[in-house]
Length: 274
Ligand SMILES: [Zn+2]
Ligand SMILES: [Zn+2]
Image (cartoon, rainbow, N blue to C red; front, side):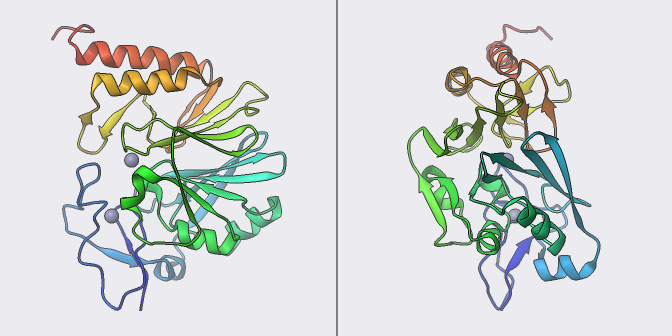
């Protein structure tokens, strides 16, 4: 029996004697099946290949990024938020080696694992076992959990506080349960927002964007983007990190509002003429 990992999205499936028939996450329009066909690996294969390592970088006081190199699956970056001794892992990675475990243990381990949306569920249940930590996923995305775990808490409603000053907010959009993490004391008290793909940092770091499907370029309705902007307007933050190590460094709250406005105008044909 092996726990197979989809090579395109990096999500792990429960132990089985044969490869799963398909990856429902990749077969859906917000992801894609590799044009060469569905393929699988296992975490043991990734470790024994000796090809991979996790690069851990301190981004600011109390915030660390973790990125696997070379890329596995979607290639996301996960973050560790340290707030008054409470450590949250924001989003998750497929690859977990001894060096990564030792580093995280040296910080104090993990108290909570919180996910923005299903594309980063990766090997969350195994990380939860290793660090003896609960996983927080919005209940609206329950159907996308491929490897069930007793450690998963499905939270409901619009927000969930993990620790004073560390709160998940459901913005929806890309996924119905799509969540962001607001860290009130981050960025030297000016506030930090971790967004996964729910709010996307674009090439021009003075702007962000919002999509239903990134690989297939399917936008969100104007009403949904307005709703996401409204929900974000109540949060105080100066800096914003996405899932690909891209950062809006200043006035990020204003950047989100202006970007939502531009997006809606573009959808309504009021931003440009071509
Ligand atoms: Zn997949
Ligand atoms: Zn995504």
